[in-house]
Length: 107
Figure 1: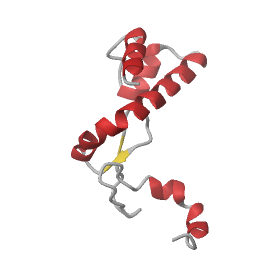
Figure 2 (figure 1 turned 30 degrees about the vertical axis):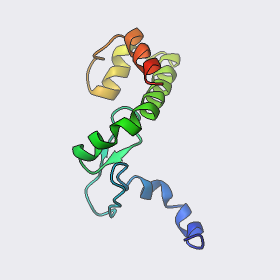
Figure 3 (figure 1 turned 90 degrees about the horizontal axis):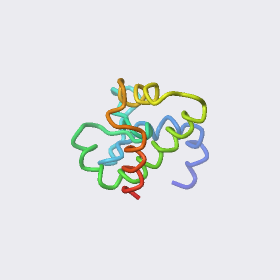
Figure 4 (figure 1 turned 60 degrees about the vertical axis):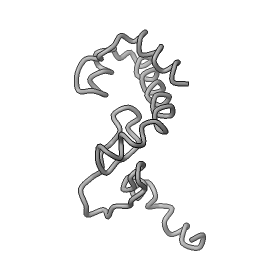
């Protein structure tokens, strides 16, 4: 495998988006896209069952990444409603202060 890595390196960003983070199954580029985590926007899952099964392991890093994104967007001058619509397609379900308390308790 180490001999093949240089050839795969330039394609890795595309290939890693085709691997389910829950079960590890790799999907071909011709198959439908995987579900994307709505928090960190990085994790990919083949279905809801894989996402639910992986949540306990993924929760900490996901909330940290989400907090980074929120802090960055706030420093750029975005409102809480704009940020909430980016993640959820609507206004945030909790206040920003409550969100920060949730992310601190997950650490």
